[in-house]
Length: 72
Image (cartoon, rainbow, N blue to C red):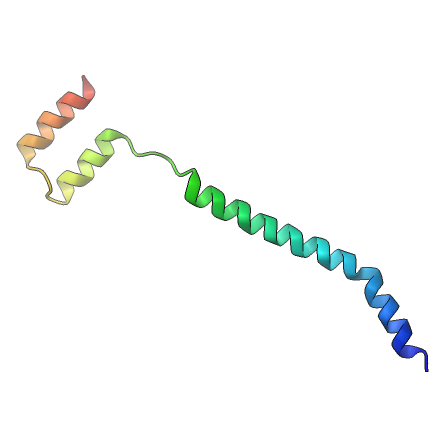
């Protein structure tokens, strides 16, 4: 007759472990997403210039002129 009460107490004894595990996982996800979206490495001006040239947004002459300007 007391089996239900005994199982309830047993479950409550280890419930704090699951609560801590839950919060650790939540904090890990928040930190991971924050670092992934917020602190990415910045592209250099020359990298941006190379991408623009590769996409055809600027001509070769303009690319060379801008690259020279960047390096000065």
